Length: 241
Ligand SMILES: [Zn+2]
Image (cartoon, rainbow, N blue to C red):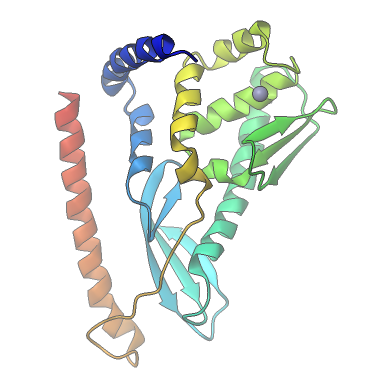
């Protein structure tokens, strides 16, 4: 892409963004990905807090409840982030298989098999045997981008290339695909990064009274979170005006 093209595009993007802010707040949520994500979980375009609990008697687990990840590990040495990545992989499998089915029906295309992988060089691929592979990391992206990538791969089952006729087909189902491609280029590093979570010992009280000691800490952080989110929301709505 030449410099001139980039400049033109940037002006276009600004105008486009202004219209999106009012029309499609969902698309706008995707900017959140650029926040600092260390110690948090990136999931479907949003950034969530994670509470890590050490429960030596229980099997390690991940739960997503009330907008927060609850990770249980057996000891401090366990990798809570890796556990979350596995959870994300399973989510990706469910969501991407479902979406592919929906879009394949809409687009009148038959899909043979959908597989989830950790492909580092591409988000997805389609084969002549009508198989589609996706990177599980797609599940970290906002909904609209996930849909675009699914449409992208399903459309390849009609045109096995990136020729004009291919993009015309994509545009029928996803008119703003060019914006999504730009978003993908700009956010690649965030999406490719593994979730990094570190267990932090409850500071004031010793470990003995598990539930009683931990609850106040959780409540406090929950309050902090609410106020931070509230502040963000206000900023966002100000921007929209
Ligand atoms: Zn392609």
